[in-house]
Amino acid sequence: MKVLAINGSPHNGGNTAHMLQAVLDVCAASGHATELYQAGGRAVCGCISCWGCEEHPGRCSFDDWINELYPKMAAADAIILGSPTYYADLTPELKAVIDRCGFIAMFEGRKFSRKIGAGVAAVRRAGSIHVLDSINHFFLISDMVIPGSTYWNMSLARDPGEFEKDEEGVATMQRLGENIVWLLEKLR
Ligand SMILES: Cc1cc2nc3c(=O)[nH]c(=O)nc-3n(C[C@H](O)[C@H](O)[C@H](O)COP(=O)(O)O)c2cc1C
Image (tube, rainbow, N blue to C red; front, side, top):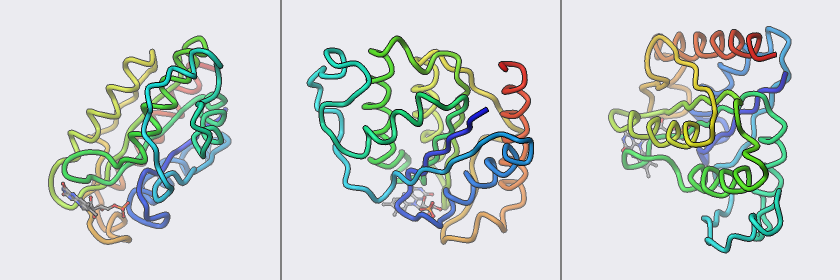
C-alpha cells in the first residue's frame, strides 16, 4: 500500500524531514511503497475561494505544484503531514496543502475518506500541540482515520540534525510508523 509524507518545512533535510523519514522507514520495512514530497520552500498561494474545484473536480484552478501533489494524495492509503512549529502554528505551505487539496478532495467525492492521516511537528520549545491540532482538524473533517503513538507526534529540536538526539521523539516516530503499518493491514 502507499504511504505519502508531505514536508511543510522549507528545510528539505531538516528536523521535520527526518521525522517524516523515520516514519516512512518503518512503513518501507514492512513492504509498503513510500514517498516524501517536499512542499516547504515552494512559492505558495492559499485557497482563493473561487470554487473552481467544485466546477472542475480533481483540479485547483490556480495551476501550480498543488495540482502535482493532489493526485499523489488521492492515490495514497496513508498521508503524513509534517510541519515545523512557526509561531505555534503550521507553515503557510502546509496550510495551502490542507485548504486547497482538502477542497479538491471534498468535491471529488470525498476522496480522502477512510485514508489514514497522521501529523508530525518539529519544535524548538513550545507550540507543537497547536500544529498537531490544526493538522488533525483537517483529517477529522475529511473522514479520515488517525493513529496515535506513545507521545504526541513531536520532537524537541531546533537546528537540523537535532531530532536524532531526541530519543523520545525518535521512539514516538517509530511507534507511529508501526501503528500506521498495523492500521494499513486492517484496512487492506
Ligand atoms: C519563523 C519561525 C517561527 C518559529 N516559531 C517557533 C515557535 O513558535 N515555537 C518553537 O518552539 N519553535 C519555533 N521555531 C523553531 C522551529 O520550529 C524549529 O527550529 C524546528 O525544529 C525547525 O524544523 P525544520 O528543521 O524541519 O525546519 C520557529 C522557527 C521559525 C523559522
